[in-house]
Amino acid sequence: MAVTPAERVRILQAGRVTIGRHVNSVTAAAVEAYVRAWVSTRDDLVAAAAAAHEHAVRTGGQRNPAAYRTARLQRVLDQLTVELQRVGAVVGVSVTGVVAPVMDVPLQVLDAVAGPRLYTFDRVPAGELRAIVRRSQEQIASRYLVLSVEAEAALRDGLLKGVTRGASVADTARGIVRGAQIGTAQRLGIGSAAELDAAPAAIVDEVRTAFAGGMQRALVLARTELIDASRVATTASYLAASGVVAGWEWMATLDPRTCGACWAMHGEVFAPDVHQEGHQQCRCTQSPVLVGEEPGTLGLQDRDSTFARLPEAQQRQVLGPARLAAYKDGVPLRAMAQRRDNARWRASRVLTPVKDLPSVG
Image (cartoon, rainbow, N blue to C red; front, side):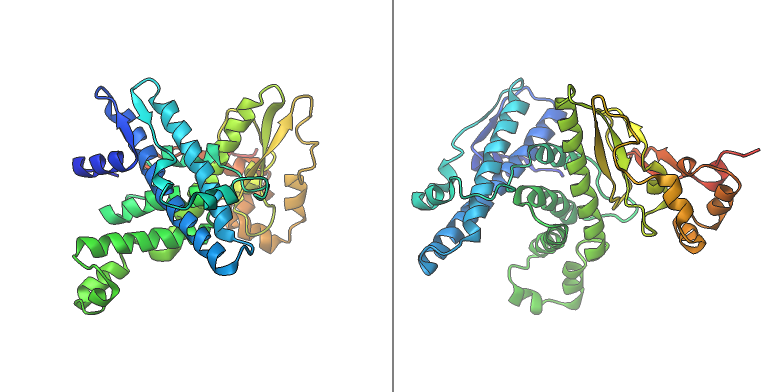
């Protein structure tokens, strides 16, 4: 997303971040993406800590969900600070005063939530943070259904918030749509719900449809990008454990709802440094193969025998009639997927066109 010079200054000042002069545009974009994530998380932390304090005062110390959210966001903010320092080590980026922005929240609130009472599953998603920040600098949505400047900003910021908050796909999608509507309303000079109610129908409609494709498209994008960020983190963890992890197997859910490409990829083995290239809304995961283990013997369902047991109607649902005919003629199931490069999005595994299926003879 383009950042105006004035906005950049505001963000950098608010985030207490400084960038050295001699930084190329690619590095500057990376730093700005981290800064946006940092400032957004800082603001969420202030709000969560205030909510935790209000809840504690009101209930006298009862279970406090906002307290756990506060602690998690503090840890995420710390992680983002580390990432900014890592990215900027060579180019002159420094970060200071991480605690200072939340000092207006009573210290006892932060003290009360920092400790062993955190849920053990409430982790800081370091790998996902790196992946989603990097992704926020790339083309995410299709160029065939153009997003406005406000919707692009809402998409990128919404995905960052989804990771930092640990939000569900649905909550992330709602945040994206709502962010696009708020940005569009501000551009049109609408400052409140009352002003929107009194606005002409054309303006109301523009705000309402600010995110092209609506909630359904936002759900698809949020699910795809959050899952892919998790895959990037998984790949990084496998590489970090190269003495233990020898590779991974593609694991699909072998049911009639799963597309033929994912059926075809199930059980295929890859080196630990290979990213899992799922299509939009792909549900597949990576099953690690440890050093000394034999792929194909680790408990995954057998692709070919499982597909062979499906009723023909379900086989047709997965492959379509033409590919099912090719399968019956002897084309193996693994040939039903191919890699598709897409410079405007990213590479993915998709169904092989019928004309490109291998001949059997």
